[in-house]
Length: 317
Image (tube, rainbow, N blue to C red):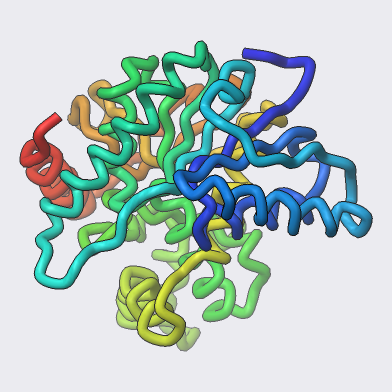
């Protein structure tokens, strides 16, 4: 991987992709070269122009331009935010198959360019599309990452912080499993600073209760539906989540983030890509953090894993 400069290529300049690009520019110092690729080349050119016109107000300088797949050769990270929307009457599996063909048209020329960096996938259903990227690219598992439940985890921490009236940064909690309806919160792992939340809930001297935790988990699970109902799409939150993962990679932070990663025996599972806490650094996934889940939490994990397996197995690769 090139370490002299920090180059990111974004494929897909829709609302998710451009929310990421906008966050990247405004946070500053994360990368110094950003390439925009889209099947609509004119749109990519317009987006690059628009971002460039704001560089005078940005924290640091960047080179931003619309490019093509040959620009991927010396990139550090390829962020994929491209995909097709679900049509009326179309099944989830139909959508998966169409998105698989879109990814084939993307990953083949990226690999052919000589790209040797890290794939970061944001296209939904992200766990399955990350596995598709892995299968099509034949890259090592540590270098194919999905945004997974990183945004869900941020939503969870925000809601728990609001509930306990504490800075979300002091809440340590994770959403695991599919980025979707089968995701779950392992309550046994939720910490208020260094204090287990389970012990707080068992203390009758306060007003906190398990029922509220279940409501918060449901709020996290259904957040996207409510946002889509109100404004037709979600993009700011996931754009910032992508930026956070890119920052962890390029900064070699060794930060723990809940991304979609390939399991190789962790959680008694293999081959599936699923949202789990991982240590993220310059070379991608350094380590999958295996939490000590309860038997009930493991059942939820297996159920989520099986949903992903079933859907992936229905795709014609």
